[in-house]
Each structure stands twice: as C-alpha cells, then as structure tokens.
Image (cartoon, rainbow, N blue to C red; front, side, top):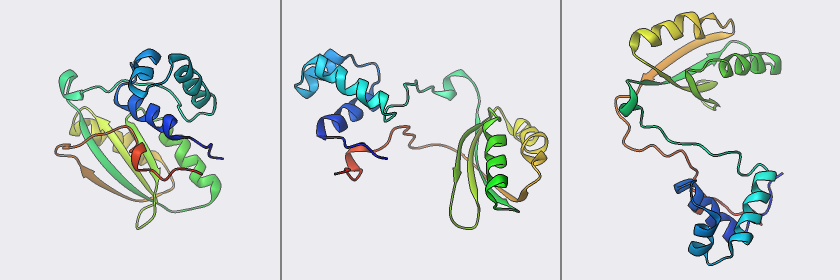
Length: 161
C-alpha cells in the first residue's frame, strides 16, 4: 500500500536521486529544514521501503567494454508457476540488469550487459536458451545511449493524497 509523502519528502527524494552522498545537514540547508527533521523523514522512508537502498553509477566505458542489448521474450505458457520459474531463472543471471513483464507482442523485456558479441552468444546459448518455456526471442542491440537516468522523475509523479 502506498504511503502518503508530502512535498518535503518528494524534495528529499529528488535531491538524493541526484546525489545520494548529500548529508542530512546539506539536505536541511537546501530544503530549509533541520538536519534532524531530514534524518527522521529519510529513516521513515527507509523503514517503509520507499528508499530501498543507495547505489553508485558506473560509467562502463571508463572501466571496460559493455555490449548492451534489450531482449524481448515470448513465453509458451503463462501460468503463475511458469512465470515465476522464468523470473527466478532470470534473476540468477548476473548479465541481466533489468527484467520487466510487459504488454504487447512479447511477455518480458530484459536489459542485458555482456563484454562483447561472443559473450552475448554464449549467454543466449548457454543460459537464456536453456530455459524450456521460451517461444520467441528478439534482440535489439544498443548502439549508443544518449540519456541514462536510474532515478524516477519524482517531480512528475502523481502524488498520493
């Protein structure tokens, strides 16, 4: 069940998505609130799992090559056990960065990162291809990324009353 967030909570989320290293004091100064009030709000959002964790953003081009692909998958069966089994298998593959159950022609869309085309071929053949419930696979390979945000556009979301 969603929890009511006020404008200050949304501002905290916006600021932390831009820079998760901001201190409570820095957030308090930006939002004209005390650091203890900011601390309490962040703690509450963590307890409610609105804030699930903190991460860093790695520029993969600075540390090595990365072939990114979006894989669209159609399944043969759509029973709850078969969907759950598919998702559990996908979660075990470290190459899969994202997995979304989608509408339309395909059932799932994966975002996959591997070192190169040979690695992708191995992933397709020895991991994804070993799943028995697959009906169709379509791959779109990313040539370049002109925008890459990992946060949500909190300012544009519909506020919960």
